[in-house]
Image (tube, rainbow over all chains, first blue to last red; front, side, top):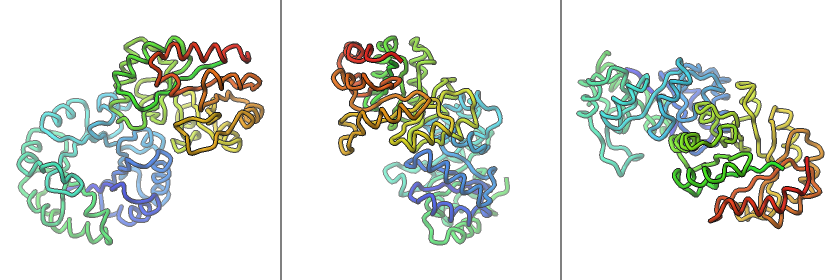
Length: 202
Length: 202
C-alpha cells in the first residue's frame, strides 16, 4: 500500500523542511500543497528539500505545475479547480499527473483525460472538511473497481479508520493532519502502517 | 509610450472577457492578474480571450507561468514574491519576462537576472496601495536613467498624473482601476492617451 503525505498549509518553510527531511524515508510521496504560500516560498521549500536529500521522485507539486517544471520534479497533482489534465498532458507527455476527484463520473473523466492516478475522498470524517458528508468506503470500493489507474484514498485516515479499507482494492492512502500535525510524525506513520500496511497486497 | 492594462481581480471571467475584448485594440499589453481566481478559471479566461480574437502577443500572464506555457502565451509577469526571474529564464530562453520592482537595487538585480522589462511603482497615490507612500516621479526618473531595459510606471496613473511623466524617459505606463473600474474603459484610455501619449517619444 502506497503512503502519501500532504502538507497542511499551516507551517513555515523552515518547519516543513525539518519535518519532511525527517519523514521522507517512511513515505512514498510527499505532496507540497501550500495554497497560501507565494510561488517564491514554494520554490524555496522545494530547493531546501532537494538540498536535504529528499529525492525529487518522491515530491509531488500541488497545483503549481510551473514550480514542478522549474525544479524538474516529475510529479504534479491537480486540484479540482486547477489546470486541466488534458492541457498538462498535451504539454508534457512524461510528467506524472494526479488529480483529486469527488465522484465516479469525475474519476472516469479524469482517467480518460490522461491522469496517472486519482486521489478520492474524503473517505472518513475529517476536520478539514467538517461541513461535508464523508463519501465512505462503499463509494471508494466502487471507484476502485471501475477505474484502472491507481486510486488513493484521502480524508480522515487514522490507525483506526485505515482498517476499514482492508477489503477495498485501493492502491494507497494519503494523510495530511494525522501526520503533519503530529508532534511525532514518524510514530504517526508507524501507527498507520501497522493498521493498514498488511491489510491488502495490491 | 506603451500602454499596459492590468486586470483588477474584481470581475468574473465573463465580465473580463467582454471588457478585454472591447479594449484590446487600444492597448499594447493586457496583464491577467487574478490572484484570487483558481487556475481553471484563469485558463478559461485566456481561452475565451484567444477565441474572441485577442492576440496572444498582447497577453501577459501574471505569476502563473504554467498558464502561459499551456496556452503558449509569450509573456509572463513575475510579482516580487513570484517565481525567480533566473529560474524562469533558465527554463525558457524565449519567454518575455516582466518583473515588478520597488527600488533601484531590486531593479538592477532583476535586470541582471534576465528580466526583459520592469514595472516600477507605485508612482502616485492609489487606493490599492493606500497604506504605502508613493515612490514619486523623482525615483522613477532615477531608475529609468540607470536601467537599460524598458521601465513601465504603475500606480495612480490618471489623465492628470500622467502629465507629470512628461520629462521622464519612461517606456510606458500600466493602469488598473482607472480603466478596469471605468464604465467606459475606451473613453478612459482615450483620456489617458490625450494626457500622456504625446508627452515624450521614446
